[in-house]
Image 1 (cartoon, helix red, strand yellow):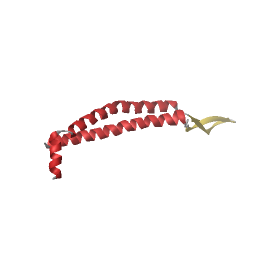
Image 2 (spheres, one colour):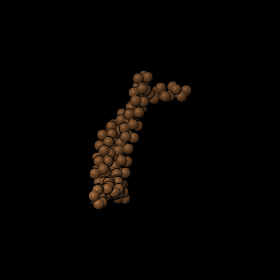
Image 3 (cartoon, helix red, strand yellow):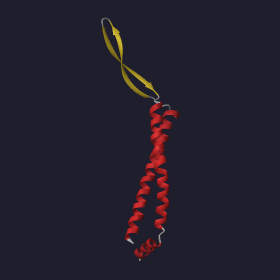
Image 4 (spheres, one colour):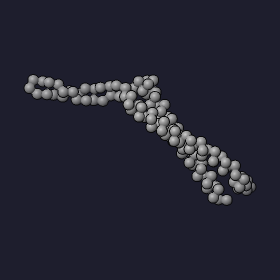
Length: 115
């Protein structure tokens, strides 16, 4: 009887964790899409550009800003991968958790506990 309770709790924990991971993956996809393709957020970096001065070369700090599409594609791919892996696990665990919570032995245990 207690093994069914422990199993139901373990299934519920796996369901919650996989659901949250799938949601974070979907959030990463939405975040990267909005940053890159909707709001066109620019990533800035500083590079030294050589500048020729009489008889020696000096370096001048230059700021380069551009939308980083490769980083966005990488974030979208990671988020999609997380969602594709964990959404079916969450769906399966939801069914298993629901099935185990509807077990007649667990219902009897809950009723006897209330009395």
